[in-house]
Amino acid sequence: MRTSHLKPLLISLLAGLSLAACSPQFNWRDYSSPDAPFRVMFPDKPATHAREVDLDGMKVKMTMTAAQVDGTMFAVGSGEAPDPDKAEAAVAAMKTALVRNIGATIKSEKSGKSSAAAGSATARASAIDIDASGVQKGVPMRLVGHFESRNKRFYQVIVMGKAKEMSQEQVDMFMSSFKLQ
Image (cartoon, rainbow, N blue to C red; front, side):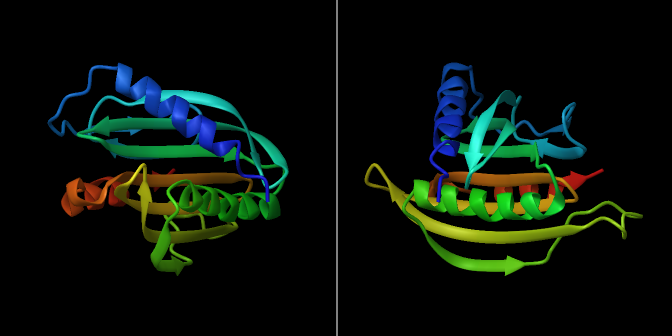
């Protein structure tokens, strides 16, 4: 399984965000992606980076938009696969890669909850929601993720940070605000 190319994208995004001036306060703002049909509320001004990644042998351009507040990263990644089957495979590959990055154990996993927009009953869609815990550099971490595909597009919506410092209210705000258009 080749998911190691996703980690450099996250590392470069985190480095860029740490260099940006981040407000310690949550300053929620509506964000509509210019690259993919989704909307979400970010807790601070997000930064966007794109690069090619390898998701289990499928090379795709993936765009990651994220904001970091008080050490917690709120991010949405999106890309387009050649076909719906490969988009569904990308969902599983992204989930596996992110869980492995923090050596996590999945505490809960649910399949099938799609955030597809109204009137899109004909869209081929799948989704996985997880809550995982792990350790990164000796620090207990938590990863909350929503991984979704709709037709040829795929998305990862994540909140990741130090387990003790993640506010469930902020996690819920971000995750529930993600909508496909």
